[in-house]
Image (tube, rainbow, N blue to C red; front, side, top):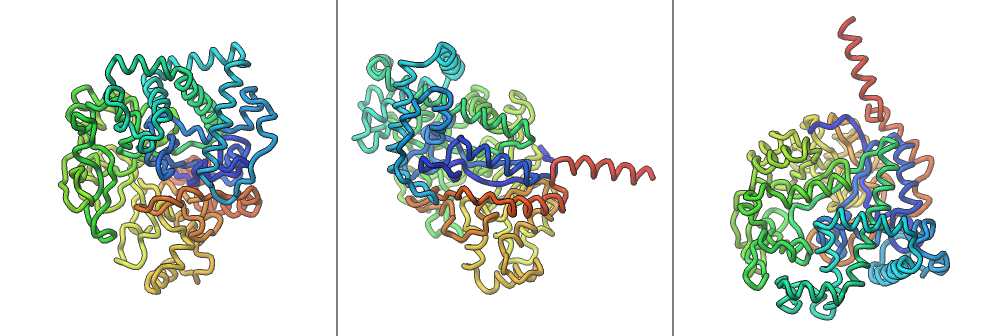
Length: 516
């Protein structure tokens, strides 16, 4: 699917200002949408919105369908009567420049449990009916997820509650155990259904606020799911697991220029043959949910649909493995028949083969161009704008890269010189030099990380692939969305024809000129 010429900003909601220690769907989120509107943007790109587990990574979630309760706004809960105002009069002094996940999780989950208790006693008939309707509509994933989370809490003392450490009869979902534990943990199950109800209520209200004002949400979908997830526990037949529920083969990427041992991700691999046999029903539901949460979806590790690196689960690294064919074009054709046109962005970074490019291009999925990758190497790098086609999304960098300022300061003299000469700049304002380069390119879509708009260094880096702990924490401060920033971003967006409405004007002018 080809997109109109437009611009947007990459910002995960956890990075928004909030007095509760982590960004949420409250007032600051609406202010951010207003900032996008004022600066003539059309897109807000997020990272995956699911409930995070070990390491706090949004790419390792407990569910491919559920939302992260930490994003629920306490202020909105008070406004709508789900929480008494007295509950938020005193808030711990959380840092305002990063998320300190341990204390935040403890505080916020206690607050959300208080909201649930308050709702059980004081919820109105309308609120209770809304929850019942949501629970019924989403039962196909919500029932399993809520029980999964309740069981994780019950067995948290056992290796963090990973599902394969539970008693065998419930780990393997024996019918009798499912019924007994469902009854025993009924209140905890109800809590998690309530939290999902609140998440979707607040997120879809915020999304509607953005959509009505011309802002589309770009979501993010990791190709693989976490082993410790409701998806694997509830659908073991769709993954390569042994009789005890342990993975036999796992996902990753082989050794390359960046890593001598490759990357051993650990995600269980799909049994694509079984998925194909039922018309990719699980994937249909997953993509359908993705398009509820977002208007456009970026698929992480797109190349895995053509071929993926299969690692024996007993191997400590990704050195030993093999390439296995993925589901390919029939997968996307099937889903297109069921869901209609697929507004997807293909994350096609890394070592990409002609077969992957052909799969991407067959369905007109735009690929990704990262400007930081273009300098210091070959002069005709595919990441340099003079090599771009129009059907792509250009970024200065992504959540996995250094910030542009950090990249430039750490780059070799050769890379710095190449960047300065290519852009005809002195490098003193490198982040905005790169933003200008992205906006001026022919790429239909330009998306800029918020850190680069603020010209921040690597203290604001969101993630470092392969490293656990200390990442996914960055937040910006309330005063960051200044009038000067609005003016500067709007100026570039309009100058290079990316502002809403400019595309139609340009089309009309071209038609008039042709007739003349």
